[in-house]
Length: 119
Image (cartoon, rainbow, N blue to C red):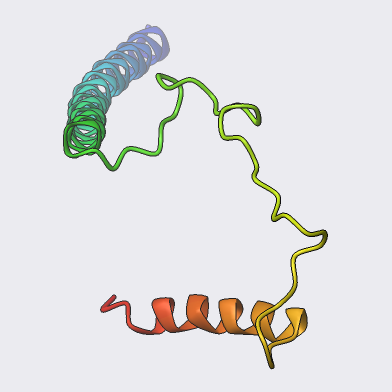
């Protein structure tokens, strides 16, 4: 009989330990869920703030006129501005200036424009 009582006591201890471990595991699971929910809520709030910021920037661009979005404007047509050809044949470069030199001059002006940029 003592063997049976000892075995029952050991079994009761094992059942109790198993129940305690299950309760601890469930408690830890709930804590993990709460922390992950809080983290995801913060992530969603940060994403919403970012989206609102980007929308505000887009509105500022369109209000100030420096928007690069051209979807609202009609595309320019090649036929809108008539091309005038000089009378007397081909256009000639200015005296002492070759076409190659003129292109270099234009490219140099573009470089200067970017060099003077404060940022």
